[in-house]
Length: 228
Ligand SMILES: [Zn+2]
Ligand SMILES: [Zn+2]
Image (cartoon, rainbow, N blue to C red):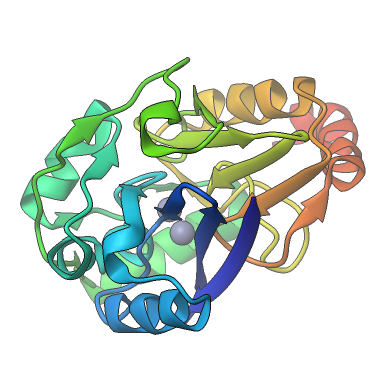
């Protein structure tokens, strides 16, 4: 099994390839589908080898290309039910800001009246805690890691490799994103991820990072939680 990362402007797309086929984890912005197809061909696979489009959550930078990718591959789209309203509407609000920086950005963005829009889609499948991807040819298990969005999912691959979406990111350093629908739940999810003692984490933003880097973050957070 190989995990190939693809950058769609600021967000990552992962192409997981094994002898059974291809699973795409997240679909980038609205322009990403042709870039994903090009990468699949570079990996000497065909669009029809894609067996599943797994979405970690329904934010524009992760699902913008999903509808077109489904048309190009014929593969089903999977999401958690709690994010379905965003997918059906093809838009979402900016989640609440976290900490003083997040609050300041939230205020700025709301003042700009930015719209977070993408091509709406109806998911084909809904995944939840404990589901496996066996029928899609991949030895992987689904974990619920809500908070950033209420439907945020993590995919656990063999050898303690986790694809965590935006549950924890590595944009400038390893940290929780500045936005979340439920910040307390998001902290619980980071704890849950840390307790799995991952070897490597593949995030929606930034380069992959080690379980040790995550542990440093959770330890630091425990000390500073009261100051949040
Ligand atoms: Zn997000
Ligand atoms: Zn994101």
